Length: 270
Image 1 (tube, rainbow, N blue to C red):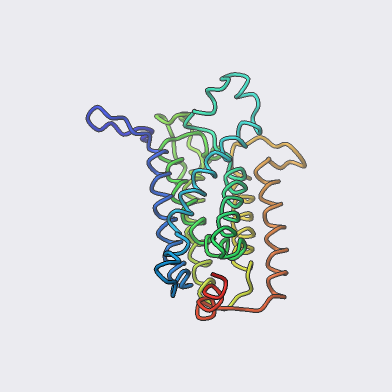
Image 2: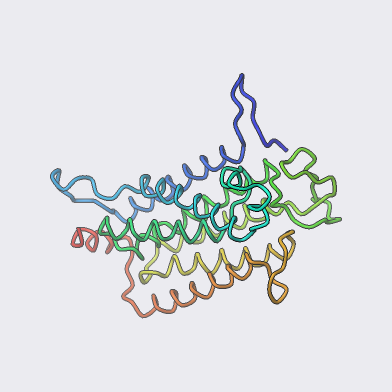
């Protein structure tokens, strides 16, 4: 593993570096989604260029990281008791659900302020969120921050002797599992986003698919069980999937639109 890169006299944490790559990947995907939906097309010079996908992702990423750290601190108070306020600056310890909740809130507000619509913004952001999450998991893998799974005898089990939280026993490389699942989810959402759908359908599918993926991988992760034999992350991901199902059902009652109609809707709304 490679928790840090040493370039001349500069030391870079690979987790932070991959977070930056995750933000770039998410920004590129969402920018392409805005272009496909023609968000901001047809505006006059006086009206400006319209909502900026890259800026939206940057804000959501920062807010999401803060939320992931705060949620982790609330989820594991023992670490705060042991480390004090230093835990907020520790390079390890980020909760998926906290990042999701804060990031979604940031996108909702930005979509409202940008006159796109909060739910429509989440639809556009869903493929980017999936891809960004997957790239970020590579940072967990490289740093060996303890996000790996239970011991295994499977041939692809891996040791993390030089990780931030080292282990000499072969374990499930769960960050790689999540990376693969995130890419598949991102591809599916991007494909579905190009078809006709009711507003809210794409983010609903994101919540269901990502929730199910996280729920399943938790069975082979080291996180403690807190209720009904489930971890905190599993309870949160189950809630995420339920919300996603509700959104999908609600979206099915709404008029279906595709990229062609979105241009007219956005121009009228702006």
